[in-house]
Image 1: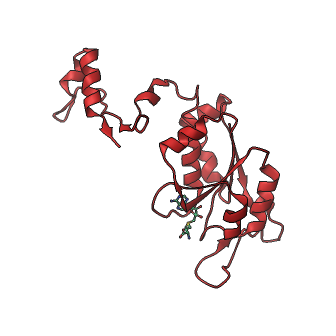
Image 2: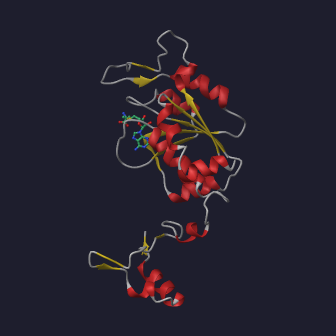
Image 3: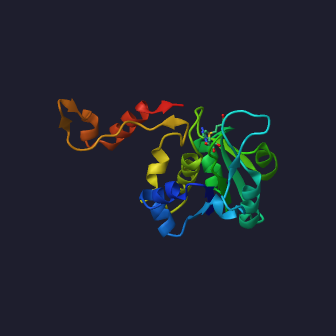
Length: 214
Ligand SMILES: C[S@@+](CC[C@H](N)C(=O)[O-])C[C@H]1O[C@@H](n2cnc3c(N)ncnc32)[C@H](O)[C@@H]1O
């Protein structure tokens, strides 16, 4: 599975890729993530990626030309071009699972900044517009990482123990049961007795009873 992330702040993305589950997935060759500076596809001396909005109004809008050229260079036959926007379809675990099932997936992800993208990018160059929630962030880098991380950890061989995916929140329409680790007691706050009992049947039914539906 391959992701090409296009941003004007590559450092924000590359740092995250060096740690934890995603870093392992990349090292194992299960996922490839390339991070591109959008300015690479600019042609003017100022390397401009934004300009003022037609019709007036606050802020700057991301220009179509560098985005068009970037997609033209990176897009293959079955590429999904995704765009981060608060106006997009809200991301959820079901969508991540759907994408994780397509192991040949090649996705280009466009990270917006300023007031977002020229509408012609939305209308003509993009297959999937997604939001990570009903709030506005300063840029699409975090949403892009949310998508890549969320898909990658579902791929076979990425997690050390794939059993954790089974009981995980949202997997079967429920939220995961509460978990504890050592010590048995801290500050007078105790681990529930049943978890210390060693009775696997009782533990399983206790956990099941605490799973909340979503
Ligand atoms: C400041 S926002 C632009 C907001 C836009 N003017 C609006 O009102 O919808 C800049 C960029 O951050 C990203 N972004 C912000 N919030 C997001 C969210 N909830 N989900 C996905 N992307 C988001 C998008 O790439 C967006 O183009």
